[in-house]
Length: 418
Ligand code: NOJ
Image 1 (cartoon, rainbow, N blue to C red):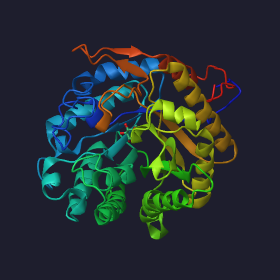
Image 2: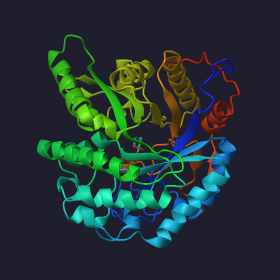
Image 3: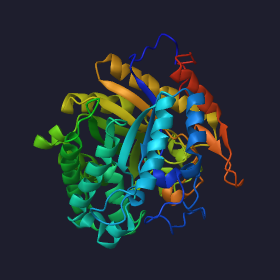
Image 4: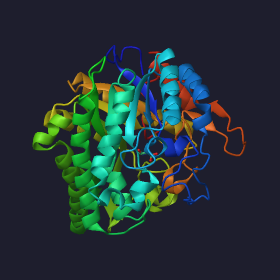
């Protein structure tokens, strides 16, 4: 960013992770899962033991915010159980380390994982999960009210519900269970509303901010004449975007949120019912032939970022945090261009009047990318998973982001398509 691109003074420049992806030693539905590259999450980046080191790295990066999850399965051994005091103390110590480093935490309550006793009782298909989650959130927020004011209830409910019950990517690996997808979203939206009330019951030293993180993917047809692809794109948009947003933010439900978190990675264009993205096994050569620019996961579409921010601003009027954006690639120059292109869009949206309060780069570390294991490199810091000490190393994207966090310039003319 050039020095004359000014972001708001109080802007949060952060980075993000989730417990199953970085902590290691979790006991949830992912523990026994083996990813497509043969990896598992049993040790991951071992942040469970190395969080002090990671906070030091954050200081070196110059971030002033960290979006982190708290793993429900560590804190409660059964529904409505008291919080495990040892595990709570560890998270409190992490929060205190962050505070000492002047890093504001945003806590995510649900990031694609559940305690085994929730899974055993039917997970988010079972309405009894709602009061159990609300109880957890009430107890946790009471314990952390003096340390945390930014609460992110659910991370990407649409991704979670679709990969568990429509696309077979996440445990329990069901496919095309439309009714289950619908139920999970309904239950999570209700849990979000009740959790928001429960969090607000506490006397906070700073008023709490509460919201979900919505993944935004725009869907379209690759070829203008392909009516069938337009229809599928419209149906996908309706199921993954409209329906989900209406459940969480429609009508009176809007009052449950004080902000909207946006996870933005790009778009999916359909060609004869096939989404032209690497995660759908479309090879880099094929994507190149279609003229599609992607990282190792999704098609890049920076201009869609600016557009959706303006749309969210007009539709909901809520302050926005970019709870995730990042690119997975071994090509550091590509990742730097990608970040630049998205930050230029973000800056333009802010200038247009959109109230964006922070940006969290996904991710602090290379980590366990769910079905794909360790093959996707999203980190500002790389991690050597072949060395049992799991050493972290600054990447060039990390250096670049450090410049942004500290307001030092970089070339804003870099175009993504270079
Ligand atoms: C969104 C998810 O919240 C996160 O867990 C994942 O690693 C990134 N997208 C990248 O796919």
